[in-house]
Length: 295
Image (tube, rainbow, N blue to C red; front, side):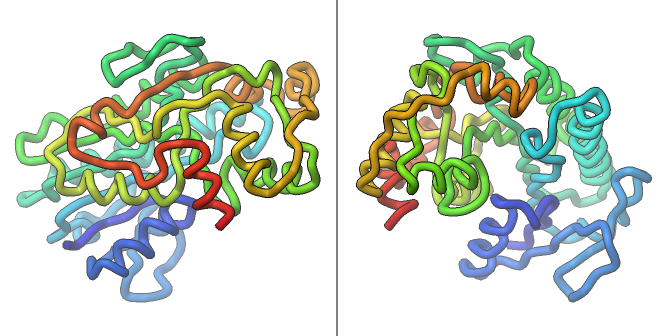
């Protein structure tokens, strides 16, 4: 299979490219600089430039491109970057895919469980409507930008609504694990808020599964949800460290600004569509995740 990959330099994209190559697939990486090898193709989403030849003959396109939401404080300027980095890349890819005489048969479009906003203890599935948070608004416009591909009768489009990705380094645990190793992990805010999470290994496995599984529309890429303190305690127990020192919500808001809402808010998203498609998580519980991440 030939897979075109946008956003290949991030945490998920890097791991996905490695796994695709290991399984014998050919990877074409879309990059914003001059190509440095036969695997790379140059594009410029800000200028709306993508040579259709870059997608010609491909079996699938996976778009994971987008500026990090938690990397910087969410000022008005940063919010614009977060939104446009997603809508411009998605719109350009979707239009190019739809314009090909023989388009790739599948577009797996990056998305986020932030689509639902903050729902407390409510069980959330792919049928739950968009929420009213900043990130929910971003996701709604992000997914809408894929409309040209969605409308094409020969292209299957699935939206990868990814939760908090747990990996040994980088991602959500990049800053949390060092604190846990020092015995400084504990509840963030109340600690009772639900986190919708998935290990990096299962995230990559799920994307590979969806390349072939006949699933369209939103797909929650999460394991069964757990409370924030459940996840931290599982990691701390694996490291033989305590998990009792709390991080007050007001301190998090001072440090992170509006992004603290994503950490303190509760979202109980379930993998309904993914499970129905036959996918089985390798790490379904916080304890399984801790063992895999810290083995």
